[in-house]
Image (cartoon, rainbow, N blue to C red; front, side):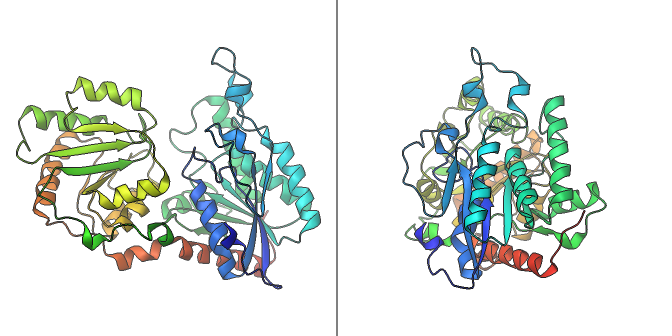
Length: 426
């Protein structure tokens, strides 16, 4: 992290970045977006400081950590842990989210920081609605421009669940959109969603800066060209990260594999699908056992980020799941998949942003997440071509455009444009 603030210039601009998820947090991959912006913004004239939660709020064993320079933490707790009774708690006690306790301390600390440092603007990132409330509170107190970063849409077809929570999220979304000076989304679909949902929005104030990969994280990992040829061993397919019963439902995929196994397909080409850190292992373990797929599908626990990248690079193929009810989202891991350079088997809606990105990169194996018959057919073709070594890797020249450094350059340009314009909108 020391490189993130190295080379402070006398005339560099400064920003306060409000992010609930930040290292050593491991409960959400979203921390990478904030961390990489902080690392690379100084190369483009911006010196960031981070306002985040105390690590105890993450509840993932992160209490032992080395303090990071220019990172300011304030107390927060998880309402699920502190306010529950026999494992249950009222929805009202977790509005707008389970970490609302962070709000007063974060605003108080942020105001202190503004008194000590001349920040040109405030940046806050969602998910975690409380983060948006912190950003808005600091905007009111300081009068500084406020940039809202939406890693996902705040409201979509199925998220959040619960009438009261949806009401709270809708109010916070409207506040963020109307009172922010600039809005940043991670996909073009999300950008269009907000321009449509809020007609008063000036399209020049809504920007798309996607997620990406950091080339520095791949240094020292096996080069793409040194991987052993397919067909000489059991093929290893990886899905790295969370699977959901709705948004990334693997049941049709498992049903398709069960059908192929029952019919004796692919008996001559051994393969293994490794589902790493699904977040729902107990549920999936039952599904795998019911379908007698233990020979083909295996669950694996979470591992460190660097290890996960190495596993992606060394795999024979990579799986991505994205449902039709999340069309304006692209799983962040997909950019790391593309950089890893291995063939991708995508189960996603044909008209969503995930499918659009894959088609742009020439990924041919794209099938509807819910279509068991199509999944089975395309899977056979995928495995046979993997074994023959006849699937081309994504063009790495195209992939290079998704580097975290370039994303930070784009964000710095948004910051500069905001300062030049001088005002937001009401």
